[in-house]
Length: 493
Image 1 (cartoon, rainbow, N blue to C red):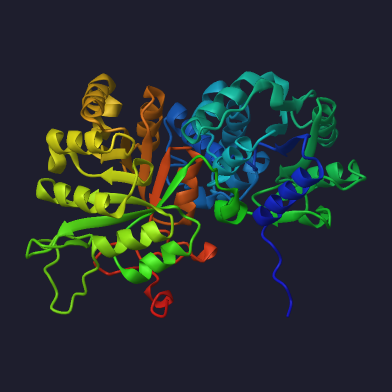
Image 2: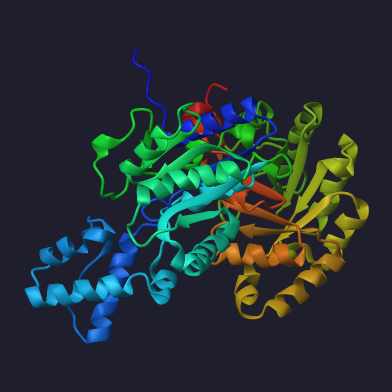
């Protein structure tokens, strides 16, 4: 059977691991081109043409959309011809485009990254003794604008580009680009970096670098976007791709060890078995008191939200704690109410002999209230006591000092970690502010592997997910009414 060729991101990961193994003490570097590789230049074309209309009081490009742009940014004349404009207007618009497109305003306002590329760069930047450099054909005269624009785009992804790791064309626009690309490689090698990969959208640039790399140490990655030179000129040893896919780049073994991972919604035995055989240490369950008021049962929905079914098979907290303790795992207890439920949970935890380092309590502030939060923190001073604070998102953006006052009040009650929904509007800004203030943050409601990896790259204290990750052979069912996305994989477990 013919083996499937690895994706370009998988090849990048393989190359990185290989070079790290061969040269454990070297400073490794990957180099990225900018235009057409990090940045989708169609947005610049669209912005500049819309700006032409605005500046001239015309409506020639009002219906133009990103999907309509399939030409390289250096060949906008072809796009203008497709618009069936008078020749005089085409010439005027093209001249205006060429003059305006590299202005400071256009650079800051129009540049957009390709989906996933900044997350890929972030992952590479957080690797030990590893640097991400930029090797661009842009001339040095726009160095300041280039760095300012890229760092503005990278801020929410925690990506930072430095002046010393940016190599620009010493010539003029479009002058000696091939020689400049090779010179950029040599420049960083002389700085002491071992360049292990180079990403560019132009086949000619990759060919030039290949010819200057006799030992074939540099993995050549072709960003298959829009490019000027012919694809046939790609070096045979290059890898090509158009999607920066974190799920193909980052294996489970590469996850950061200091981030805690929590398997969410383990409210039944099949899902518990999946968790116990995984490498995930923390398990979260949703605790209710059964309608008779006797047992603590595991169920995401309240009985008001989802009435008791006649054939419902209850899974008790007692059974889960017994298995978790037996396998040396750790437990996160989502308290769906306050009052007597808290007393019963604390009694059961004590009976099973869990120490504080193995315990994590989570509950809404309005359900637990100050009294029960203080009770949890005082009974188990070494445990994690957490509450979700998504309701503070609007305040974080509009009145951050007021939000911080509320968080400080919760901290005084005993809360030592705060939870943010991944789906919260402006979540990244919310997280950055919380992190800047020094609060521990958990990110939850992470729906899939790609989102999970994006959340991990923010480097929160913890990430809670259903672990519906078939790519990693995890088939967590989640905790909702339907019982899970991958139920078929659990029936015989």
